[in-house]
Image 1 (cartoon, rainbow over the protein chains, first blue to last red):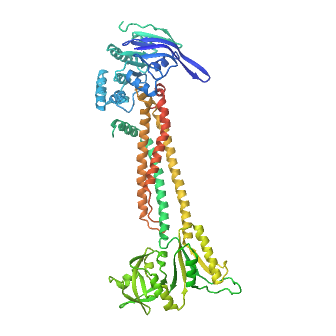
Image 2: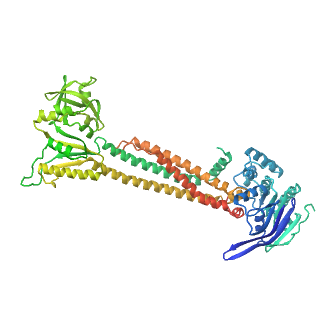
Image 3: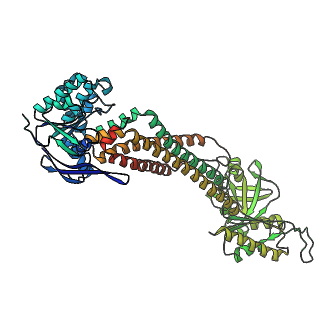
Length: 229
Length: 410
């Protein structure tokens, strides 16, 4: 599903060139449940941005579901993000002025899907994460765990190739965190490729494969493991 | 309307930021309102003054005789200058730029005019045919004094509308005989005049007839003419040449301003027109100033809008919003607000102007706005607002979603 070959990325900081990713080689199979770990500054956020087509890389190749992701225009990048990737963020990032249902439906708006169909699908996905009764609530009327479940429903609604979760439990207490992880497990069991970036060992331990990053290179976990091990 | 969702997004955003919306709208509203008001008031002032000039042709020159105040070549001062038909001929024949020309011969005081049993007092002017063009008399029925009247010294009269009403009531006056003093004249025409009722209480008769009956000489009391289409400077030059010619003929010092009075309406008119050009320039300056202030206001608000929505933009981008859709989202809102506000400003401006129309003051009439100008101004403001919003909107569309989402607000 994801194939990274010798990915390099550096940022200019003043006069210095700061190399963040120093040649990443990584394969993630379709249907895998993977976590990426690393301390801050290890390059995991940059890697996530590159996988999520939010940032470009300087060197190497990135193939997503067989498609080369390289030198895309902003518009193409946006379309790929919309079709291939579902994001889940630490701070949920729901639009505060939209109901749970409208938030879930939003990615379909950018696919120019008819409003009625959008709303119906959104309700379906909310039901899947157990929040059908909360469809008309605004984010600030929901608990953190509920908000994150809404965000997961939103990530799933476009039926992407990959779910990318950036510290999805970072803002939740441990009981809620486990609930959310249960949901990810369920989603993965149904065949979705899930990548979770985290710095919490217990969260990473729930995934099938842990990739550890350190100073811009993969320290361990580079070898692919079977998804259903 | 085509895209219900888009409109819903826009109204949603407006509802969420009422203060910001009102401030933006107010800036645009005020800019357009002031421009419309100023343009309308300026136009009203100009109409008012033009109205004051409506009575007479603006290209007319009036020559009145005076009394010499400087001795000239042995002649004492205090001499009365007198005009005669020769002066008329001098103007008509030697000055090509003279278009319509007339002399005037006044019958002393008000004359008693009688028709049947009615007797009323009016002033009588003896004139040449060209007079009607200089006073802007409008012949309502019949005709004005003509050349044949002059040649044959016919006893005919052209009467003003007020005279007609007073003397004849509903009776048709053409062909009827009236008595001016003790002489009988035939009514051949009726005229009206935009200068008001007083201008229509006058009776015109052929100048040759008057000279023959009331003077026995070829004396004229006054000369008037209109110029052909020419520049003010040329008219002034011509007036000086006329003064020189008259000075030679009547033997007075050219510098003797009291011997001869030449009054060019064009000169007065031009003064006012220059004043209006200045007022118009000022109005535009102030009006454009308020438009620019509006534009700056809109630009500022747009910067705030983008800053405010950075996080929202980040989220939308992560979910697959294209840069284009982000720019469109921001611009559409700004265009909607500015066009509605501009339109309201236009309406309010026009409304206030129509209220002002009710005020009838001298030198202020029919304040009107060129709606086209107002519409263009609104359009300029709307597009300037959009343009001002385009820069931050494009910047916003380029934002890295991850960075944007880390920022506060939303």
